[in-house]
Length: 339
Image (cartoon, rainbow, N blue to C red):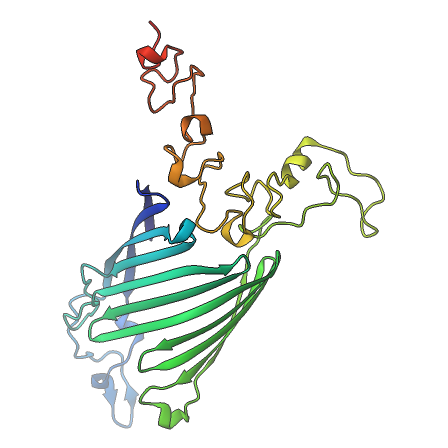
């Protein structure tokens, strides 16, 4: 299976359009020599594999090509752009691949639509209402829910959620995240036509998610107390003082003092929330040049506030996007080109 995606920043502030597609190959086969059929059964003897199975298979092996496409919009709105929003749609099995060997049965197209809002109540609390709809053939599913996300401290998050899967179940969810580990517990209360048989009882679901690496995005390693931002020894470590290396300073540097290290901080020069990758809610600085995306003319290229977030490669005072000779110093009157 292979997939690719593309992100296009939109001109109207902190808005992005993302498109993706995937294509996969599935091989199905079976061996009739390893199977038995009713026509091969002989009374008082058993199965005789030498007898004809009576079936007419046009093929016993097939390669199925399957594809999916999707589109997602992400943006912010509200006062000071505090509310983040996501809207998405996807289509799977769009060419309806054939899946049967004896019939012309095909895999029905599947359509998926979803949306979510991230509404900050304060610096530590976020409400996340969401809706999800999917349809395949004659079957469909609608899920509407609300999550409550509370930051206890910079390493700990607590989540509570309630959702309704229409005409099927109520879903109660709770989650605890500590550092790079998240534990999820959910329970489905049955409201479907089968509730009389199950007495309303549903299923308990358990989940465990772990991120391995130096520091998962959005979760910062606690900063040392030392003014030089160099780890200080504790009784659990060697009593030898650590060497003050530049790499260590860079590793633990936190320019805006928001508890998120610069190497993990998408807004290293603006204090923000670690749940928002070190940025204030509604504030994004993709290229980390100190210029917010809604004011940055070069969102994905690190530049200077002097040039609205764009670089000046040749240092001639003309921004690269306005410079017809970006690698040669020139005069502004000549559009950045030498005389």
